[in-house]
Image 1 (cartoon, rainbow, N blue to C red):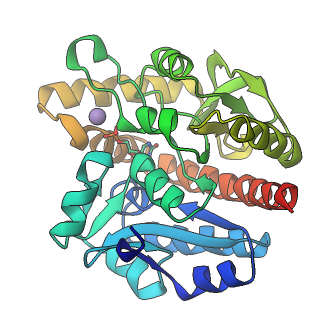
Image 2: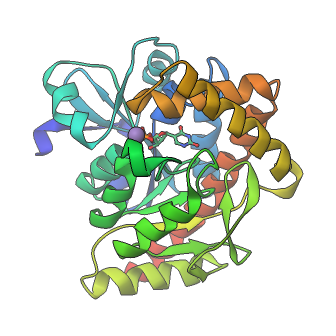
Length: 305
Ligand code: PSU
Ligand code: MN
């Protein structure tokens, strides 16, 4: 297994110095944001993690290897590529054995983080049960991964392009705890309140770390969703984003967009329809997640000593 992993110099040094590492996904770079804001955001996220006292590891597939930590050139290559493959669990072995440039989703990033022994992973939003899943069967592989892979995923909830109620039901069935930060409700990415409650509210990194430590010590394997709302000053009005989402969803039907193309299509469409404001919100919330994820990684690290 180790022969498939390549650690960046920075991550290798962190290992030797026993410093906490925070994983970052790469689909958000290649399929979630336009160039060059994507690369700039990726660099800023990494810096937030360093400033907080941990080491960033952006994860991607390159030249038949799983890269744990990307250097500047590799980030640029990924962010500026038009044909990076969106790699989820099912795609991982194919991307590796066919030398694809692969951007990892939440599911694939969790797998790779776990292989590298990284416990905390920061992203924007998780995938979920899509609206209309009762006929389309479109349920993100992210949810199954949360059910089985022991990584804490810090996110701003799930987008309202999804059916958030069904997403939470699915997570409950699979025993995945959904923890909110600073508020009782589960956030909906661009807006802080989805209208649904999270399972538990744990405001401090120490509380979250203790909870996670207990879960895994008990042998309750699997992920944890740490749902951190977008900062108020960057949030979008719920009614506005809902109306735009409805329109964007209608368009996916009209244009017959299906499968893994749906999420990137919707993200881009929403950005166009908000004249780029959704992108600013997106960047702000991921940065905020990087702060929370770094504190969590430090707290978990401290508990293990
Ligand atoms: N949600 C977002 N931004 C994203 C994604 C989801 O708000 O960039 C990406 C993540 O990589 C997530 C993936 O894992 O989309 C889910 O895609 P799908 O629905 O095809 O499983
Ligand atoms: Mn899907």
